Length: 79
Image 1 (cartoon, rainbow, N blue to C red):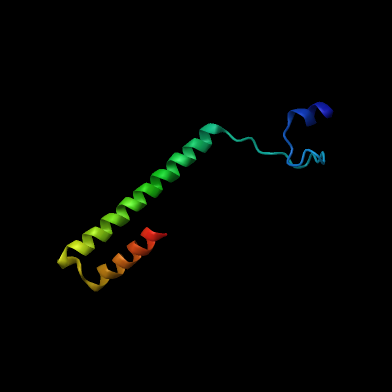
Image 2: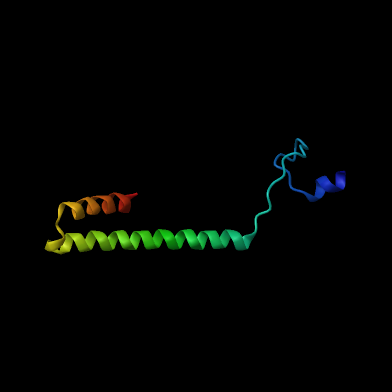
């Protein structure tokens, strides 16, 4: 029993509570998640900026619907 406790990482090692074991983190999965989420954030940033610039620059896009879309893009851009 002590050999099992020595090999596993516990949540609270000072209490010797064997019911709570730390999950093993795989570096590959973590890096994949970071890259995927960073790519999604960069894509969102770029597309919101494209919408803001397009609607602001072209006069024919100044319709009520597009102004609502512009407002949503600006609020999403700052969040």
